[in-house]
Image 1: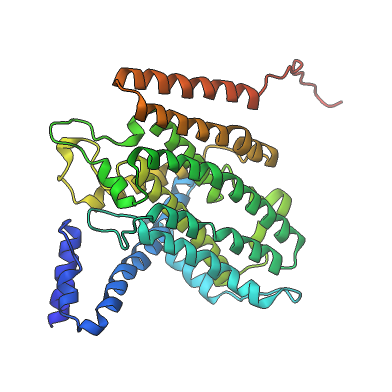
Image 2: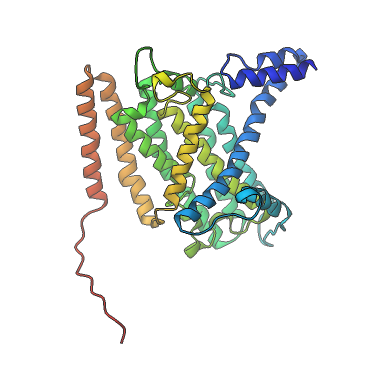
Length: 402
């Protein structure tokens, strides 16, 4: 009974933002097994919460897209169709695993596993609330980017091992897209590192806590460089997760289903899971860097709710925005995709770093706002004109067929 009491006490401390929540449970465990128990306590919530969030998101996304497109979403399995994810999971588990005869069976099997594991590792350094970071590394941001970059290898493994030209083409598209947009993703995050002077994600979130007597929390998104960095970060995260309008690696009209064309059953479900978990991880990092992490938006609201509630409320909001974008914007062309990354995103993130430096060095607040806003707004207009030059189109004439 003592370990059970310690586990319940640990859960209560974690949910109420108390320091050192794992201590009661670890004290009831023999010393030789405490490190293993601590690892299990850190890993188990991640493995339970985010796959469940993935399942619910798939249903809500299909319902939301149905609403946007004036049609019905899932409405048969369970109350209002909310158990559709369970039916889909059972279907993928029982579906036949088809492997092409010419495929490299070992690499074909390892590719979806190699995609999901690095994504799960990125959650290890995200602070989901006060005292709720599974691993509080001093270089947590560096760990996040180092681990997440391994997904590109898994994508190429899937396309190459399938021995299918469409799969290989989809993999090459995906790798080119992920490499191109990973650069602005990292550069946008560096602006926050310049201001805070740390790579610890917990320290970055704590730096945005409201001070006594203030009204608005000092989230970095409330600054010119922070707002631009946040927008660029989210666009790059959308492309990294292969979300619409950047879902070219799985363009049905040209390459059927992209790099996972030759995957079926549970292997296909792992790719699907990996994409959504990557989206959750990128959104969680954006929340930590720009949206105050676990902090409330206003100082007087701090302490109203447990810190993890604020984090997951922001996460749910960003997921809703991604669903809205998917149901609104059409897919871009490949040349538009790459041009946006190299001609617009990378120059703008570099200028965001300059704006962050000005914000840090200029003495007065009005001068900071004027200089940073003028720099970023001017660069946005100039780069927009260069990226989308005006073209003269003839008058459109409609004729009926003879």
